[in-house]
Image 1 (tube, rainbow, N blue to C red):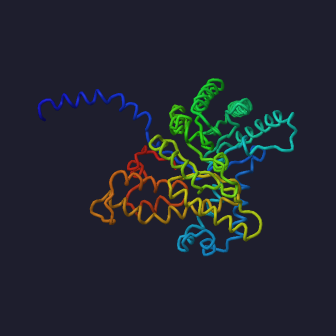
Image 2 (cartoon, helix red, strand yellow):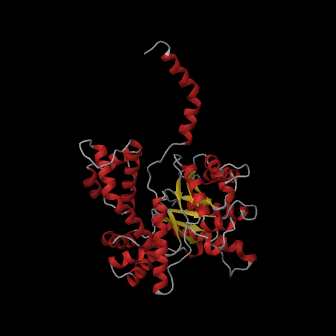
Length: 424
């Protein structure tokens, strides 16, 4: 080593120690936990003990009534016919076994209650808070993921929102049935200060009810102010920092955001340019932070005549596939009949790329093999993460991934930079 080089290196370590620490804290990377492929937003007054199996049964019924086998599934959704042969039985199995991956009990926009007089609305909401919490406490593992959306921290709804959140957490805690990984959704965020207020609220609830784990929350990006703050910066990045590690995800709100940008109702959609701009900003802000991304929903529901249902399915399948290709591995569903195309498009996405992804990863692991690609560690991480996601949602099996890559899930987890214990 040349004279003085060791002193230079020591000086650089000292100069950069602060930024090294800050970077590691700000960008911890993915924690390796399973991410649901969707979130079902369900008005709280419609949440019942049999909601999950009922949604599965309804989805199976409409699928059986309006899809006449794999070739027809391919015709409706645009999935390749050979893929549809493999995907359709997987969809049937998923709808029987795990129709809803993530359920959000909704006390915000979905909880409209138009028939309840205004003077009775507080009492009505309090009733459903207690009722819904009791239903969840009776079967907290009915879905792999579950949570609550309450009214926003805007001035006009703040008091009601905090009252609902406090009542729900208190009821769950009192029954000793707090679900693992419970998450709450903070909607219509316009400023980092609202996120900081949510952190303060979480700290209060944890202390008041001796919660078994820290509360985490999702930030809904459904206002332009969340993307571009008054100073011209990307406010969503500041919101992630303001969450102090409690933010689990950013959820794009298709229709509130589009309406706030003055997009005509007919053209409000997940694939509108304003939506793509917002989601690209979310993606850059969240990269490396461990905060997950979720696309929004389509309000084109598969209801009505056979032709109307199939047309809505074609739209939904296209949008789900589009989101997946852009790195949004989660989205919203609003109706049982959206589940067939959610899973069909998702399973096709993973199965379509399985041969190439597995071959490339096998060649990366074993230099004696050739895939036709020269992949670097960053791409290997992406390939391993892709395969792990496919297994976790049911699109791929552990056996077929092992057979094609020549390795197991623990090794894939290490390649992906995740803990060796992979939650699937």
